Amino acid sequence: MAATTDTGTETPEIRTSNFLSERIAEDLRTKKYGDAAIQTRFPPEPNGYLHIGHAKAICLDFGLADEVGGRTNLRFDDTNPEKEEQEYVDSIQKDIHWLGFDWERLCFASDYFGQLYEWAIKLISDGKAYVDDLTADQIRQYRGTLTEPGKDSPYRNRSVDENLDLFARMKKGEFPDGSRVLRAKIDMASPNLNMRDPVMYRILHATHHRTGDEWCIYPMYDYAHGQSDSIENVTHSMCSLEFADHQPLYKWFIENLGIFPSQQIEFDRLSITYTLLSKRKLLQLVQEKRVSGWDDPRMPTLSGLRRRGFTPEAIRTFVAAAGVSRTNGSTDIEMLEHFQRDDLNKRAQRGMAVLRPLKVIIDNYPEGEGETVEVANNPENPDAGTRQVPFSREIYIEHDDFREVPPPKYYRLSPGKEVRLRNAYFITAQSVVKDAAGNVVEVHCTYDPASRGGNSPDGRKVKSTIHWVSTKHAVSAEVRLYEKLFTKPDPNDYPEGGSFLDNLNPASLEVIADAKLEPSLAKAEVGQPLQFERVGYFTLDPDTQDGKLVFNRTLSLKDSWAKIEKKAGI
Image (tube, rainbow, N blue to C red; front, top):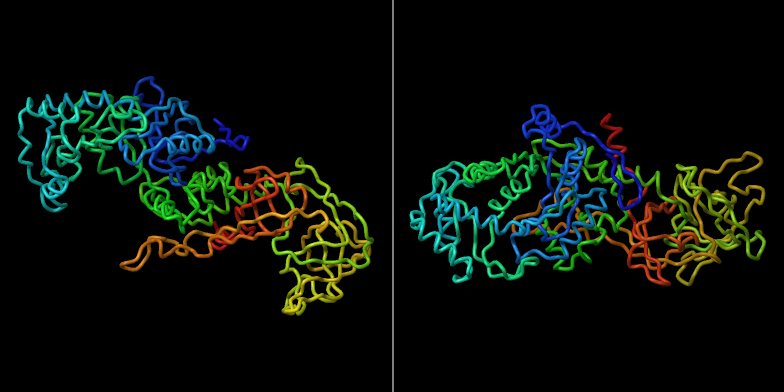
């Protein structure tokens, strides 16, 4: 079914055949789960903001269920109270809705703490779990290596009664953090390290954002995750490839507890050039104030992309085009930018903005209020209508659109040269005014009154069209120009002894304090897609206040991916 995003538009359903959809189709055909509906879940840990890598999982978890009339739960894996906050819970829900999805049920792993505890009691009673007094370092030492088997903990053969007593006392808070853990009793010689008596519970005297101080023991991810899937009757538990080695452990718990057999299916992570998708490293950028926050427009978080002006429709299209496989790879960021430009070209309202103003005086134009010219709001969409843009004797143009001594093949404004003012008139530069340092600060021109609308009645042609803003009617704004946050395609490619921080781009943000805009742009709304003609795509930033407009550049107009596709014959 189609989804409605927070931009207020309906996103067409994007069907992509892949091994995940084929597995679901086969399970429906064979009635693996009887007549039950397909049930998926999206299970983020609320320890940070969602990033574009999560968008792939969201589109798969929700999208694949939608395609077959199934259901998707949003379940927060909130088993680590020291790192989790309500702020992250709220932001994750907002981001999922923004992408255009909604959940069947809102769940938390903490909802199941009581059941998980009872199941742990069952495993202890069945002789399949034990309380271990080894320290974390000792447990690692006893676990062995990929080529050497582990060895049994000296506490592995405690009696059931002793284990039940110790586990109950752990729950009551009688022991300090790190003094004891509960481990599953499986096989210390297993070739899969995850099966070598994994830890199920640890002692942690920390206040939980939902359960407060009710618990001082918390289940480990590998214990809570699979059982939470089972409690919710999740038929298809989709996760990234690094969890493939954990699947035998999930199955062991299911078989030994005799609970609903949720099946796990792994797929490749989304990896994008010039981008970091590690929540730990993104948190480091925030904490060290390398960026302004989780929603800094340079961040790959969904909130950062939203603030920068990216649209959910483009992100969903990009995720579908990137595809799904069983091997990890990397996707060019130019591909994401291509889909975003394509989307914005269709929906962005146009406006003229001069970022680095140079005053132009049209000497033979009548003094006074001037006139207005009619301009299309979006040439790609006739239904977008038109607007009236004021024109007057004095205008601003971009500094780069004038050269007193033009280089070869420079077709913009220069002495004696004629150019077209977009939707207005032909003008010819006649003279300049310079400051004490010899910089051009003002250009005097003449115009052809017969060329109104940008066309000449005698058919003469000009080689360049430039944009402009009337000085009398211009509104001032701060404009933030964003570039890639990192200088290398792989930010983790750094010399020994260095860090990913060494690859931060010092030119990732340029702030223009006093750009000049046509008056219609003063009515822009936060999140509204805009195109500053000949400059790029922009959107109004939430930092905007009365009397101070702030715009973020989403992307330039240049589309590198289109050239890559053409060269590769894609």
